[in-house]
Length: 209
Image 1 (cartoon, one colour):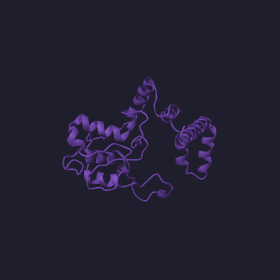
Image 2: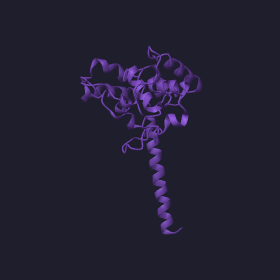
Image 3: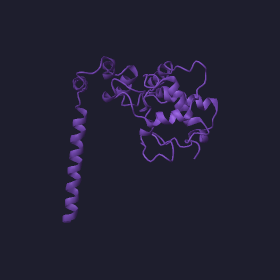
Image 4: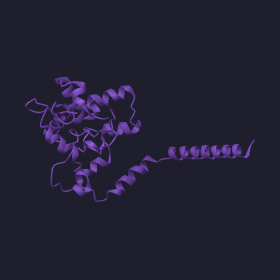
């Protein structure tokens, strides 16, 4: 065996050993200690936030199954979360896309520095999605939403699906990483309508590419 090959074998062995050690450490995580650390990290949390330190039934199920619940549990989650959706009294799901763009740009709300709130909470949509070609700064955790309505069509069915997804993402993708904006009172019904308009209005910059 050549010197170079010998060194390569040794490096691979070290990497394998390190990986094995990491895997053993990962299995030794104590959930009780993690919960205690979370509680201790927020000793002065506002009473309105304390309940969020422990997930609701859906969040607990998603955590227990690493965001990949069995099929039957996924159906239960979807049904439970669908029951939380509230629709506009007037039945109109599309608001003002210009307001929707402002909400998509705003990350204000639900941070310690935002309490007590002095203005409305934003949707912070650009943190995870690309919506327009004009915006240079956007996240890629979620899929691109460029030409969303234009590609899918502006039907009532598709519009309702967008509203439902924004209101409570778990209704279509149990254990989704997307926040449950409506169900958790992050956004109001009217705000959700405005973001729906951003995605589903032909004149919106999302669709006017």
